[in-house]
Amino acid sequence: MSTQAMLTQEELALREKVQDFVASVPRQLLLDMDADKVKFPKEFLEEAGKRGLLGLRFDPQWEGAGLPWTSELVALEEVGVLGTSLTCLYSLISIVGEAIHVFGTDEQKERFLKPMIRGELTAAEALTEPRGGSDFFAATTRARREGDTFYLTGQKRFVVGAEGADVILVYGKIEGIEDPKKAMTAFLVERGPGVEVRHVYGLMGTRGGGTGRLVFRNAPVPLSNVLGGEAGVGRGTAVFHQMMIPERMTSAGGALGMGRAAIEIAARYADRRRAFGQKIRRFEGVSFKIADSLTLLDAARALNYAVARTIESDASAGKVRRLVSEAKKFSTDAAWKVTNHAMQILGGIGYTNVFPVERLLRDTRLITIWTGTNEIMDLVIQHEFYKEFGTLPPRGRDVEADALGADLPGEKIYNEPGEDA
Ligand SMILES: Cc1cc2nc3c(=O)[nH]c(=O)nc-3n(C[C@H](O)[C@H](O)[C@H](O)COP(=O)(O)OP(=O)(O)OC[C@H]3O[C@@H](n4cnc5c(N)ncnc54)[C@H](O)[C@@H]3O)c2cc1C
Image (cartoon, rainbow, N blue to C red):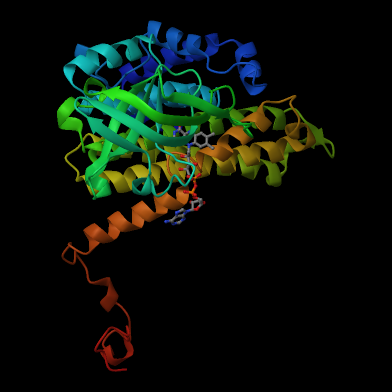
């Protein structure tokens, strides 16, 4: 891996530790999950917790490892080789954990975050609704307050861990507050009356994670389960923006493991399989796909590490949002392209279950859609770019003047209001 030089000794040691853990995951578990025989493999997280591999970025006060984002990305790439479902379960501790770590009360950190990091408590997040996921603030799940109890009503769709997770971070709007951004609130919902799993989806891939629809009918949630307690009422917008960092960075990190696993299988195959009297890797049509894949994965990894450092810098929230979106989009698009290259290199056998490339391909198809589609990433990237660009004074050389016709202002027509053509 050419980006290895960017890692510390500790990160290289962590990588080996995660590789050991990943190697210990039973093959049968992966097969049973893909066959929908397993709904939510808690034992996977229990083992990760026992090995100290959960909550890597969180404060040691809450039993985290206090490591930087790059370390978590190193771990995520290794877990990523297991495919989307297990990587998602692993990531949910980072995603829901982030919300609790940053916004939770100390009591909530004791009750939820610590056991999550130990692998004893599993978590899910519920943002998407049947009416749409991209337009988050149009969500219709609502909470009616009566004293210190909130009654949650609404539906959430495609929730990994709808079946199986112990605690679900659910976004809902407080009734009576008009502005959706001020009404949005994050609730830590435990299973109980009024919380129902409606439908567990038949998925193209990413199976075995208990993905389903959740229905809340006047589900009572005590104030002590509003993320942040009383101060957290109406604070869901800030929680959402903070959570989108791990939401998207975990997708970016895991994607590289999937792409890497697929292309390494294909590279080995191409070095053995023969056609027209020679190894198929001797054909440019094959070996250039390997070159393209390696370049994409290395570029994505380097971008991810750079973004990881930016998250921990004093960069503005808007700059972080833009770069995180770039990392998610680029890494997931790269993984999708790379798994397709891998399948093409394998020829017909790649399309069968003799090799796991077809499963990785089904898995990587999802990651360009979830945690915000890659179109929504484009929306964020250009939006944050223009927000900053418009405020910046011209920098360095005026390149626009480096054209023969640059001093023909009458030819620079923008059709702006009041402009004469
Ligand atoms: C297997 C699986 C697991 C999932 N896990 C979870 C989970 O655990 N928790 C959770 O909350 N959600 C989860 N999701 C939901 C996922 O994040 C959403 O499906 C995704 O955000 C898109 O929302 P949508 O499906 O409602 O599509 P829509 O929002 O309806 O979008 C449909 C299409 O329109 C495009 N579009 C929408 N708005 C714009 C725009 N402004 N500009 C350009 N294009 C636009 C989208 O890019 C997309 O192509 C999961 C989904 C799946 C399939």
